[in-house]
Length: 161
Image 1: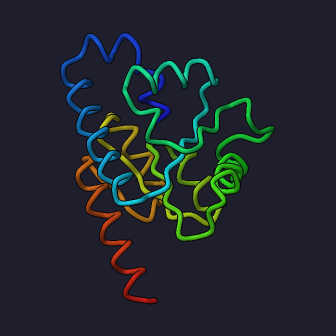
Image 2: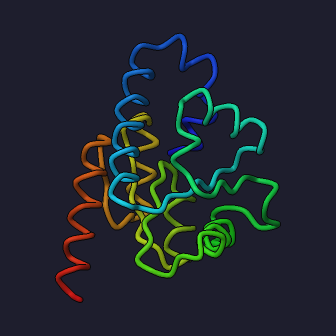
Image 3: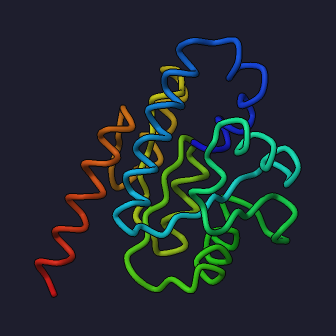
């Protein structure tokens, strides 16, 4: 999902009211998650300069402790290495969630032992169909649903402890 944001983050961000509204909502959700102490990273198939530029334009960069881009690993999604490298950089060993809008995101997440969340709010009907065929653990249609899902998963984790 962030791959799409990063691809579209420049001119689309400034020209599309819908894109601006959706990224604003996403930023608010990510800020809430960060405020709850969630550790967050980005894994993208984009290069580092483009990623940094887009994250800055979207005012998202400060929310992520680690950003893993195309050139940071030899293997790429759907291989799990970019995701596992990010978890290692974060020194994270809890329940990890990966949010993506492409089938290779789901495959990489599952191969890395993460929960795969399919995000549909920026993709068309055909892309959504392909995403769902990859069998993500959860599908969210709006950023607010992602927030609710993370809270629900966090409560379930606490209940088991």
